[in-house]
Image (cartoon, rainbow, N blue to C red; front, side, top):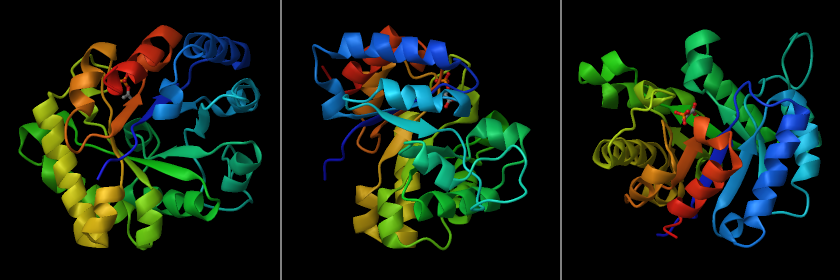
Length: 257
Ligand code: PEP
């Protein structure tokens, strides 16, 4: 089965509205003479306050907009939070859930990931659910155990159809923002394990449809080899998404061009 490559840029807490627009304008200029953004799904995920400007800036292009978090409630007394309805009405199509920085600094657990995932699905947003092990978990041979726990907890109680449209991002925490990329073999082994777990929960047809991105110091010069692996269907990109040339170059490499 061939799965469409998906590259998403997570801008994290970078780029105010003017800077976000400038980045998208540069991307559009680079992309005007190629069709990489049509051959792959290309998503940019700005901070909440930059979303409206970026939604406007990508109009007329194939670039999609994602958010970096979603609350599980529809509305109410949740100071500082943003609901699925708010994201949807702002023109957002994707949402990152359970990024390791949220697990590490903001108390995100598999149970809250699951609640946010259900909210995203309810509002017809495409979830990008992040999983991945810490360095000491890898060094102690616990990678598969951690991934299994995150997948079973994170995806509990959703339907097979919902799983099929959900995107998973495998992000080994030791590779995020460190310049240490997982080798293609290490990444492929983790992706294969994730797909096997999804097959166990939802069946192998669904598992074959689910797109699994790699994230962790992915750049133009390693994207091609990573995405060439059987179970790697794209990337979730941090640092290299903050400059138009590297993000566009990475999309091109991931497509093998
Ligand atoms: C990320 O934070 O999702 C990420 C992959 O970051 P970087 O590409 O900078 O390692």
